[in-house]
Image (cartoon, rainbow over all chains, first blue to last red; front, side, top):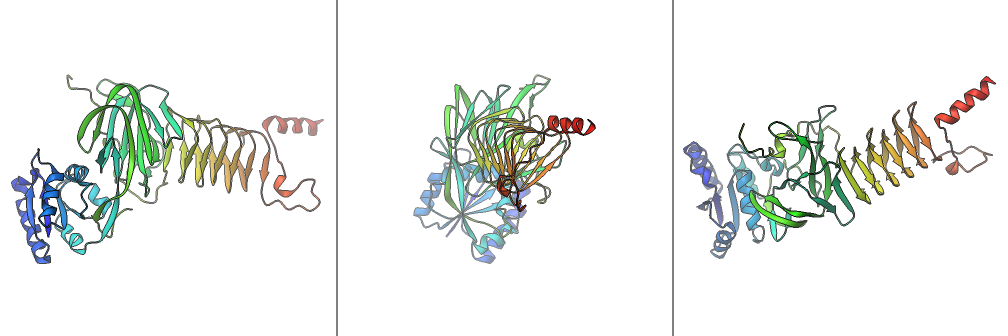
Amino acid sequence: MYLYLYDNFLRSRKYDSLLSTIETRLTDFGIAGKIIRLQHLTNAESVINEEIRRGASTIVIVGDDKTFGSVLSKAAVCDVPFGFLPVGADNSIAKVLGIPVGLEACDVLSRRRKVKLDVGWFNNRYFVSRLHIPPSDITVEYDEQFKVSSTKGKIELVVCNLQPYTWKSRKSQDIVVHPQDGKLEAFLRPVVGKGIIKEKYDEPSIFPFEEMVVTSRKPFVVEADGKESKETKITIKLAKKRIEMIVGRERKF
Amino acid sequence: MFQKSTPPPMDTEYHAPTSPDNDDVETVVGPSVHVEGDFASEGNILVKGSVSGNVKTSKLLTVEKGAQILANVRAGSAHISGNIKGSVKVEDRIELTSSAQILGDITCSILVVEPGALVQGKVMMNGVSIAGGEEDGSQRSAVRTRRSSKQEDQEEQA
């Protein structure tokens, strides 16, 4: 049995026609199922566990990157295959997974091509898309082998899991960073000064890693899949092959 | 004007991948970043800042102008425009641009040196097979610095 988790923003009228077309297509494929609309305070993990107990065999997330991240960060512990129907503008993860946005995603879902995905883990929490530390006085140690620090003070840190990153160089050609299998990618941007409106950043550093320890004397903000917390020390690891995901043939890994 | 001066999310500075044919760099040490400790990567490495520790990759190592490595280096191939203080072992091809400075021995198969590059140390190249040579092919040294070439010119003129 399929369970469809709809994001709250899909209540908007502009998605009505697309959703009804998707639901018709899913019925045609014989994979229609129960629909649950997620609210702000819905605990995805408990909802999914309850539905698995009632017989759900595949959980399908319907929404955008934010929905994908917020559901899977809680539900990564659930032992069930996941699907994704991307709807809306902000859908970069779907591209990485090889899932087209809109109606065509139903075709990918019906083919059930399953792949086990790696998930980021820090301080007993999972993150799927990205972890962000705003500019702070942090020291970063990678794989217990080398330490990275800024010669100019504060550093901003972003850890990417699924999405490839491209940075447009002003001087030379673009640099494309592809997520490696079995690794996380960390982007460090030292703050080099303060402009009139915002901080000025230096060019970023990029390090693939399996384990990273971020420490600071003062508490720093950590934002993972949209949730914020304050920490003084975090260990970021890769939980390998954690989530079973239905993906498209055009996936980028 | 009175808005909170929080920095924009990083992806505003970056753009979606455009062409898969671009150079794939997996590790970048930025210009104002200092790395301390042994540093290994399975992919290409681009160094723009400073590294105090051994650097190892089986692929391309690029050291940009102004960058500095203070330890031994091992790479599949290398393009050096910055400074290295330590031995450099490259399996395939090493290119030294006019701003490169190496204080240490170089081992490689192919050596490309632009005028102005500074090397102080032995250069050992694999594949030399000159019969009756003083040294074994793999141990042949070919050190040439700016100073020594100047001295040779002066000797020729005399």
